[in-house]
Image (cartoon, rainbow, N blue to C red; front, side, top):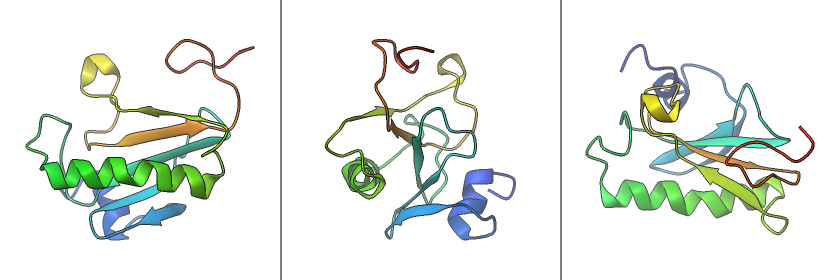
Length: 117
């Protein structure tokens, strides 16, 4: 997709702070982080969301990258949150499937907010 910002990151057309990459996915730091660690993992191929004919192999690659990214970012032992916003009502802001890995401080019991904020 020519106008998809995440496709541009995946192709190297747009710069991003790359954290991890393999043949199917790439992970990079979010430009508007909600925590000290906020990394996105995206498929290199364009899929709008989880309902967009995503193969089991690609889903496996996305979620297998999560603990690798957590280890690279140093939150593998302290804990981290994994979020997939799927569609408009979930506030998916980029129409390209992506997984958020968020951590680096204590989180509240809500889905995204942190204690003390």
